[in-house]
Length: 286
Image 1 (cartoon, helix red, strand yellow):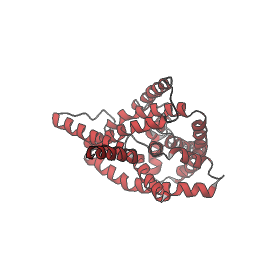
Image 2: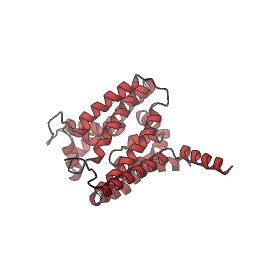
Image 3: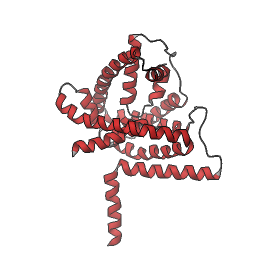
Image 4: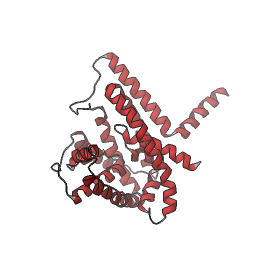
């Protein structure tokens, strides 16, 4: 039963991985999987059988979620971009209270809000304005291809980080997209090695930071996550924001955002929310 539940959670994590503005690691955090998964990856070979038994159903679920939902997202973004992105805006904002709850679960000082604010402004600078700090790499050597894999691992493992923005700032995004599209083995093979090494190494760092300075670590992550939210409403051409042009579109946008928020909030804490609703209606009957 536990493996089945982890498989279902894996599907939700996979959906988070392809939904604009979300990430699989954020969904892991909200679903209570993140710390266990990070520890599992960082100690993969120490308790190999136990770790594989835990991570396999989650990984399979993620694969199912990505394969099924990526096609659905692609269709709706291609045909109903405005409506889809406002729905996703609501879905993402609906995870904020649950994310905050995870961040503050071990106690929280007021001074940590300064860290959140600093990470928020840094994230807006990097993600919204999409600054490229390094020239684009077009013909990489073996080491540069490995660095691509490490960068993908890092941006996937650290919650609240926009993979596309990080890769762009390192001059690797175009290389990443083109190598996948063309199935360029010369780039993808060393990148896969870098991905594996990076995943284990970065997971070990995150595992250490979580255990030693949980609140500070997740304050930074929370600020970065909030900074990504405005990018959800950018159009596919990245030339501006999708804004309602008339009252009808405004009502549609507001309705979809509210629906997305309610759905996300409910699914993120389905047991707790269901229990609260049951208690409210139970009191009314009495």
